[in-house]
Length: 202
Image 1 (cartoon, rainbow, N blue to C red):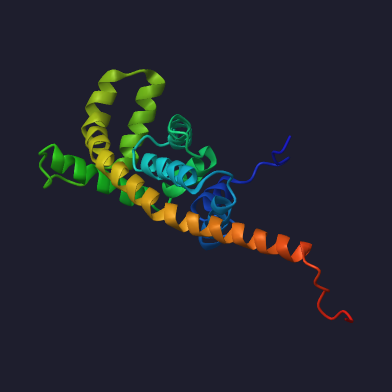
Image 2: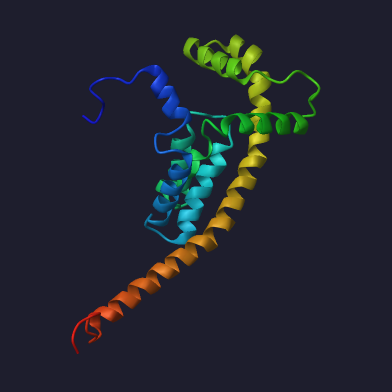
């Protein structure tokens, strides 16, 4: 019902994926305003957002939103905030996250870090083909040597990113909510007070 009648050319779709039509700065501001307006306590919103940010550190691309929403639901955090937090993994942050997870995981596993840099694009291509063809040999030969260190490295990254997000966002949202409550209380007091409007004759 809400789809375009004519499909956009592939180059335009890729361009909007890499650079949103409203621009990244406006997109971040938009998400921040959305985060402030989510119903719930500051702790529940921050917890949901932390779930999203934490999950976005993992290499399980394509499942971030669903996994973050399920985790937020399990801990009674905000599901909407979790979806927003999952956007931390995007076309501009994906590559740095891949390399950080891989090299941290390789270090923790005691692997030789002097090897050639991993080809993540080819790895994800093999991963897709292995899943579609249910080919375990392809998965273990071409995917697992890179994917396993990424999983291992992403775990501490997810924990740190989630905790930092939660403890940084909770006091900020608390202040936002307190100011909103104070403003509403002030407006109610003005509405009930017998104060003539500005410019009116007394």
